[in-house]
Length: 284
Image (cartoon, rainbow, N blue to C red):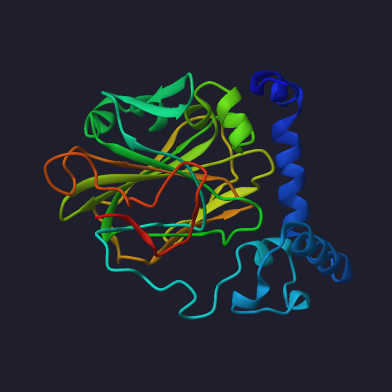
């Protein structure tokens, strides 16, 4: 079966309604029922609770609190690299931005301008730059950390669809990551600007940042933007910056020559489909 045929049912599903229902269920305090659901989930997806700060499944009053669980101190040591991997998960794609085009999958690409919500000036900062698209599966740790120190300048909530973001959907839905709902976080650093985009998906109840809390809901159906010129938010290398309440994908953008002249020196061990852990070397 072709990937496009495999994703056809997603065009027909009531994705918004399913996502709202999942968000309600994940935040409900269901007592023994919640514990049973979490226990099933841990067994179904092979979640490693031994590394959780709270390994007792029954201690989580809601599924969301389990899903966004903290890890034990030292569970993710930070390597000595210019850019850290910000999440646990798998590599979808990474490499050079061709002009303004980001590679999604064979036969599919999308523009930086579309990804950041139509802001041409912001998108121009990443012309011929570098990108990394990182997928978080259900079993993964779902907090997102800073790949490098940065000062937040803007946050943009872009409404959109809620397709799944698994590898099959990435191959079958054109412009997937620029079509789905997303939260665009714009940072400044010593080396220049960079962007981290949280991409929503089917069943992703909400996305949150440490400085704002829940960004969605609400979902007003129009672009919303916050600026932080007068209330600066600075986060250190490896610090938590956000989380998915039910998981999805992160897209990172860096300008040309961010780590010096020439192509971004990505971790030579990285390859599409490969497993990654927060704190390992991403580049440099």
